[in-house]
Image 1: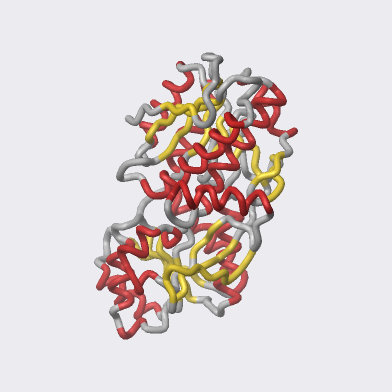
Image 2: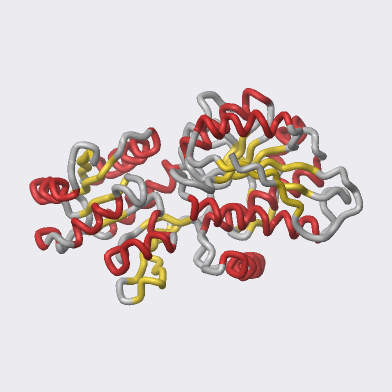
Length: 370
């Protein structure tokens, strides 16, 4: 397990740091590229906090743990971070992992601000210990379904793998599309080869195929098979979970990976804060920052303000969620209770449906905004 600890920013003479745990997928089978973007945002914000004097003149220290997309590993990390005396825990990208972390945070009484995971049910029961920046899956994926309908897509096939996250996404799509004339059929990629999946798409008469599967396997071979099948030349391929956001996708698929709409959580235009942070993230990453990097920065910005205003005691941090009012890179952040969601939720981060321009795959096009 990664056990890195960083004191970002200016040097401090006070050895008594304020520790903040950070859960990030940095190794396979986790989406390591997403994890690096998330960590870049967390570290940039922590460095800026320390450059501005820290938390009451105490440096903010990130204690990073690699979850590798493993729920058990996240649970163990939460136990360890609690024992190390962190004031709160931030981060995580994978929804099933974030759920395990949230459940453990609730049991331990450790504040957890989830950066990037969207699964509605992060906890079985409502909790005061957990808050979330990313929009809930039910909200974001309904926006994606609206995009499909506006594009005239009504016969939808979803390529799936067994997972509570994928099953939840398929249910959101079906429930939103069915009353509006859309139909959804699920194709189990554990039972179908990419070629037999193409046959099933033809038999169903699908106008769109959504990839509710992992990357690179089986997403990449499925895309290649569909793109290479002349019978499916007109079909729309979509990836609501956001796989095409990252350079890894473009490197694996090239032109075949373009024109595949996905969700991202960025505004149409950044304000001055978002512009500045975006430039700093670009320098740190060596590439355009994804929405995940901005989620990381916003997470630390929220927690730093809470720590300054309400102190470092865990109970005080958890009690502060309803009073949070922080200017984030993507708009003002406040938390509230939303129906059917057991954690404090920012309602809502901006939502876009975008794709890579087939004429220029490095360029992202905004197709729809929620």
